[in-house]
Every structure is written in structure tokens, then in C-alpha cells.
Image 1 (cartoon, rainbow, N blue to C red):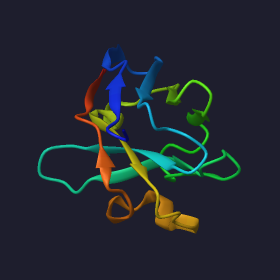
Image 2: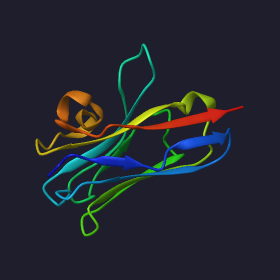
Image 3: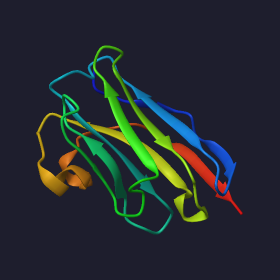
Image 4: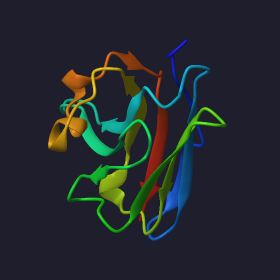
Length: 126
């Protein structure tokens, strides 16, 4: 089963930190995964992605140096550590999985992913 389930969202003051987690029974070495976010009225945006065996990670420019994505194939989890959160990071965050093996910046494209979680809300207030 590749239906991801997210957890860990919440509200935090600007400059604070949050950790998101995603789990699915079939998260393994054959599955690339990513975190996306979306605010109402805007397109879904790729935030961070990792290859199936964690050999390659890529981040959106807006979160580079603040967010860290990690995949644990033994625990079937994908985590996103977020530090120095800003108001503009406020969004619904989604975990996604794919078996299509995207490359390069394709890993941040929603079109590459065919399994999506329901999302978890992150709100950053000033």
C-alpha cells in the first residue's frame, strides 16, 4: 500500500521549528518520495524530494538550508524537518510517492507522483 499518511502539522511562531512525518506500509527502496505544499488559489509546490534509496535529495530554493528531508526504508517513513519557519511557509503540506523514478528537478513536479496523502496544515504566525 502506497497511500501515505501525514502527521506533525501545527501552528508555530516565525523562527520556530516543526517536524512532519509520513508513513505508508509500502515505502521502500523502489519508491521515490517528496513533500509538497499548497495554499488556496495557488498551484501545488514541490518543497523537498528524495530518491528511493536516499541517494539524491532536492529542495525548492525557498526552503534550501531550512528544511531537511529524510527517508527511512526500514521504518517506512518520510520525514521533513523544518527550522526557521517563516509566515510564507504557511500551507497544507502533502506527502507523495511514485514508482516512476523522476530525475533532477522533475522530483519537485506534482505530475510525477501518483500516490498522495490527505495533507497536514502548517501555520506560521508573526
